Length: 193
Ligand SMILES: [Zn+2]
Image 1 (cartoon, rainbow, N blue to C red):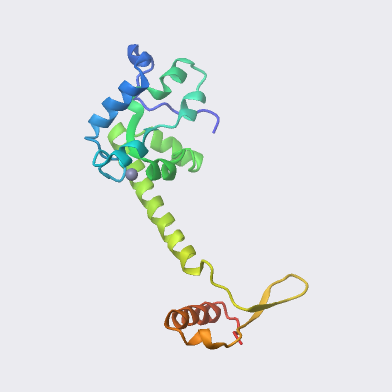
Image 2: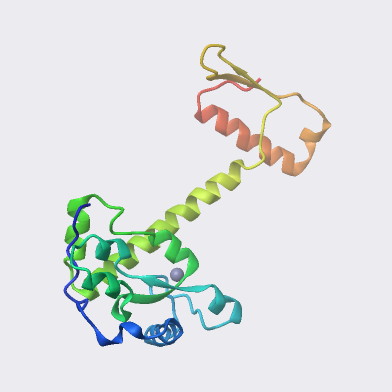
């Protein structure tokens, strides 16, 4: 993205630029009543959560850097652009909307602050949900393996799995694991011997 439209709700030049970070943090935190602006987790309910909370730039700093008018560069962290959120939401949002195709990002940057915030919430919460699903799927296969896997010699594509039957296969959690592995091989269309 070469240049990005600066949302009209962000003032170009402001006298409050010199406001200290801590002060801004306090004010921003109070604006959202201490809740993560995206997932609404109550971040002031414990010291641990409060310490893990972050200030996010609603509009990524890159947007301000992309404009030749340097006045915006300083205002990249102007208070209206700062929101209080939890770490996982900040990570999930990353540099949205710049992560989207150009035309889509430009459309979002042209929204009013309320609509922009709504779009940011939707994106962040959806992204976190899909990440949680991915981790759950990963955990399901975590540390599961078969004794041997036959592969094709030229490209190492799997051909079949081999399990050695020993007494451990009679234990209950082991049986659950065996059902899971059987299903995984069946869905991949591979024989398990
Ligand atoms: Zn959150």
